[in-house]
Amino acid sequence: MLALRGNNRKLLTGIIGKPNVGKSTFFNAATLMNVAVANYPFTTITPNIGTGYIRVKCVHEELGVKDNPVNSACVDGTRLIPVKLVDVAGLVPDAASGRGLGNKFLDDLRQADALIHVIDSSGSTDEEGRAVPPGSHDPLKDVQFVKNEMVVWVKAIIEKDWQRISRIVESGGTSGTDLVTALLEKLSGLSISETAIEEAIHRSELKADKPTTWHSEDLYKFCKWLLDISKPMLIAANKCDQSASREILSRLQSEIGIDQQVVPCAAEAELMLRRAAQSGLVKYVPGDATFEIKDKSKISEPQKKALDFVRTHVLDVWKGTGVQKALNDAYLSLLKGIVVYPVEDETKLTDKKGNVLPDARIMHKGDTAQDLAFSVHTDLGNSFLYAIDARTGLRVGADHELKNNDVLKIVATAKKS
Image 1 (cartoon, rainbow, N blue to C red):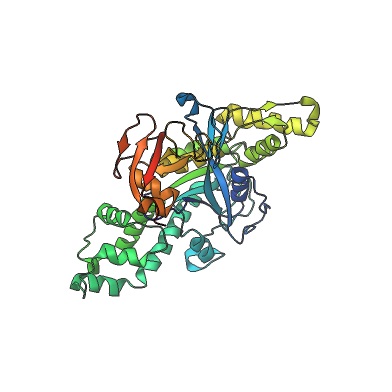
Image 2: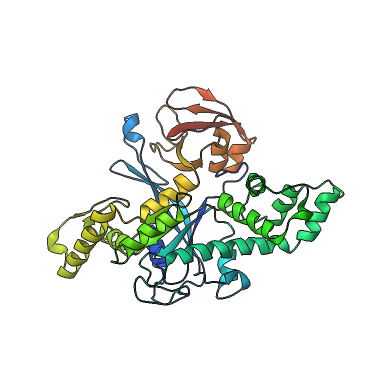
């Protein structure tokens, strides 16, 4: 679940991929952080953590109020909600065996809830991230090897104690430990839930009460399902503005199938537009399919040519740069996110300082009113009494399932002095 009872940890999406495909450019575009970007492998050594934003339609127009957000921003009716992103070192084949920066790469992703795999859709970088002629490398191979490296990594963690775990489970042990409990303890720190382990065992069609019968290929299949469930991934097909990309993207989507989402991206174009907007040269909201030059007299000829290229080769073709769509899809689709607005005054829709609709939070479909309380603060969740639906004025209990665009006041027991 996105909101964990008793835990207000923020969700984290990892930006992954082999070296030199534009991961750090994607990260810069999503966060406007100036991390190192260069045309050689392993530019990113330590993970870069920053804040991106999810774009949704704000509820203030529907509710007939003028909002002044505190934890987010509202631009012309578009609410931009902060989320946490991490850009990690590039992955190369055999990373799970320690090659390159593999072990560090994988360890840096332990807390990720979802993954955005950035690939070079122009086929102009080989498996090691070295430059090759456009179209000469098949990015489908990169999709496959990254998945494989992550599966091998998790499998290696489990295999270290597998014989002992499986024997204890089958013998019943001193405390009657079952396989799910044993694996949950073994995989602690990887943001993997009990539910995910149970579902992975079920989908693998393996016997949870007979783990000694599991062979190496069974463990591999289990780990593959476990990662698919616990760390869902989408493909950000970067460099979609390159001439070789259209054919490759068409083939890539058909070969991957509907089980893996592919989002065409042009991270450099997005970064250019966001920096131009930040400088006041253009009007652009992340995710827009167009932009507007504010004052043509302030735009140099090289800048005009660059913006014209972005308009004709990216926005007119793909209806956006894809960076914002990838972020939105990671949180709202892969993680089944919904947006909820907690307030302290349900009649005025304000916090205690009078800010209207001050907070917008990404929650999980199926989360409850008490989960929302925990996401605000652990103490609020622990002392939860009930919530009030601002639209209806009705009280709802701890197990009330949240809906997208809910506006709720949390009522809790007062602290003892």
